[in-house]
Amino acid sequence: MSPELLRLILQATGDTLTMVAIAAVLGTLFGLPLGVFLATSRRGELFAAPPLNGALGFLVNATRSTPFIILVVAIIPFTRLVAGTSIGTTAATVPLTVAATPFIARLVEAAIREVDQGLVEAARACGASPFQIVLKVLIPEALPGILLGLTLAVVSLIGYSAMVGAVGGGGLGDLGIRYGYQRFRPDMMLAVVVVLIVLVQAVQTFGETVARRLNRRLRRA
View (cartoon, rainbow, N blue to C red):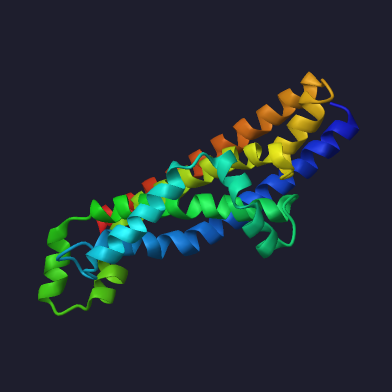
């Protein structure tokens, strides 16, 4: 591998990691409470608000059903408003966050709905408030599932970050398109693919390991 190729790969990898990290953090900050609300706001649940639950559920489904590359183009005006530009690494974090938020919300909702409702009823019988039940029962019990969901979300974001390179988003996707495809450099394309595979494998392994250990601790407790 030539020094120039190595420099480009390292720079693009850094850009990709930056995009994915920012989008994952912001997506979790927005998606976690949204997922908790979706899981606890149906009729008869802790924060019963069926109309709002239905409206938010529809919005989440609409966003998730939109192909990512179309979403990127569709929200360009919003991206410019937030980031001041529609190209580059900073701009790419906007559509990545928009795509990650509903995805994470649904994963969190699914994890929380798997918690034994007997634990919720027992907490209610002890006089716990809805917020206490969420913070001390639902989230701790669902945490291994939530971590696995976040792992899946980060893996998806790595793939999305490569796709956003097609519209000038920077990172490994942009490098692969500009050098590997447009300049007919198969070595560059191969290097990009290998790095993406390594990143996905590393994230998947780390997330599964942490979730497994946490699950064992909860069972022992």
